[in-house]
Image 1 (cartoon, rainbow, N blue to C red):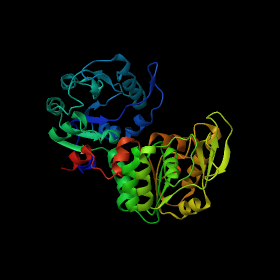
Image 2: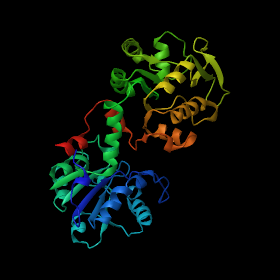
Image 3: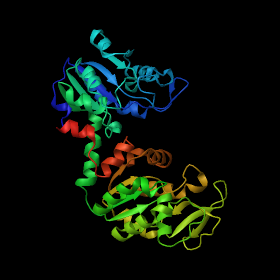
Image 4: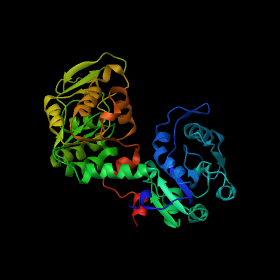
Length: 376
């Protein structure tokens, strides 16, 4: 993979693709985690006196149509304050060509016709006004679009920024250069959405620990009553096959209630009644010991409905077990990062991925289009 640190970008014209798809309320950025993650690459380019145009998407506008609610204006303003440098918002690459400003931000790239279809003409329009295309939006690297693939291919030079470099190195270390024992913790509501993750990790890790609705489907596949819990009836056969093929650790006890507002009740998995819902799980001694003995841990997804204090104990305990581990720990996914921020110090995790879909596809073993383009 071509890296920014290998190129001479002094005073070059640079297009920098970032993932600045951040939450905005009443014109104000409410979570700038992704903006802060972009600063290392941005400051490197600024120090090199590069002329920079930033590209990003925001939300899901109708392609080819301007939507003021999804304008990048608040993002440009927030980033300007963060850097202490004025960043003007522009509507075309020609404006970047004509301006003397050191940093510009192109309006939401999804406003432009052809972005989602990987339009060759849009990619060439971006590439024709620059010397170097720097891709630093790992969270979009699983999408083959004009700004995430086409522009990388047609630009005179292209490379990965520091965030993409860190993400690929961290995920590759966990999946390819890991030390055993290797624990994979996969939570979520549905087996179907994490099937390929479980299949790929099941082949390389020692044991898979499940959480959430995924656990419920596996319990049902083993013949346990799961009451009114969320589970996938049409995935029972698949779940049985996974249980036969891989070493999947299930809880011995869970936390149930008659409703999401009801009191938490701990029960053994053999004692669940028809009117009860599994909303959390108790971490068994076997699972605790395995996590403690592991040298590599990948975590994606909570154990239960941790947003509700009554059903957060399992995810909180899991967070603390992982944070105290001496293993190389890799976490990814929005709910996982929320749990980390809620229960432990993020610095106690070896690496927290900024990506969602791209993180999952990488650990599924899929080739990401952007990373492939940067490696051609």
